[in-house]
Image 1 (cartoon, rainbow, N blue to C red):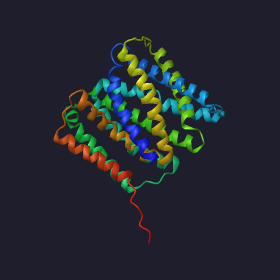
Image 2 (cartoon, rainbow, N blue to C red; image 1 turned 90 degrees about the vertical axis):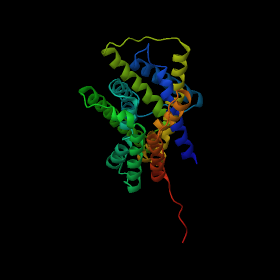
Image 3 (cartoon, rainbow, N blue to C red; image 1 turned 180 degrees about the vertical axis):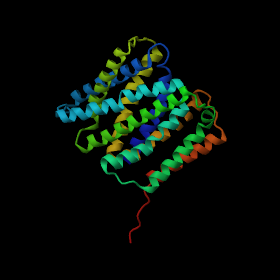
Image 4 (spheres, rainbow, N blue to C red; image 1 turned 60 degrees about the vertical axis):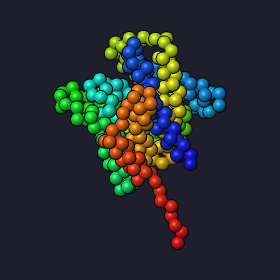
Length: 294
């Protein structure tokens, strides 16, 4: 039951962040907004650890893997997603990101020795076909220009880094590093790395005190970063990076459901068929039939 709750929190919160991110775009550079987001989340998590008396003492080796977690999951990969969406539509990025299921299956098998189950691969295939059907108009409108291919390449590199981040988190959990503390340090290290990159690139650290920007920043930091990442990475520790990553496939579906209420998104036959395939793929991969005693 706990895993189901964590799964639902992950997809519902990350599905809603697609709307919140729109209020981050415009005045402040996207990379700087990501820095603000993870900096605030890291500080809040550190304060939480202090208030709750959670240990923040870790070995140098543990910190090394938390630095790796921050670099892979809380910094560069987010920046690359923003770059990808400059050249291709968000729908195509969602299709590319759904491939994280296959990457997690492969990387989990290679790095952690996780067994590859046929039904999980079949579920991933169904899910990706479903995502492709949902975003079919954007796929059909895609042209093989240099910019388009560059956008897809940046999106794939982002997914690859995120997958390595998932495996790093699974490794940290296996080595008794609590998810909350790992995220607190990881987001902090990711913020430092991204800040250094922003300074080298000459990014301007502006800020807007508008209610939409600050409200979305707090929402993305508290819900999109602290709560959703805690749920997702805890799920990785409980059921494995391969199974947990199926949540990523449902996130754009939730986003479109919310968009139909707030932005007037109209579902068509292709999108509805894709929705059923995504659900079927998740069910096939995650459902465990009850064993009937002999």
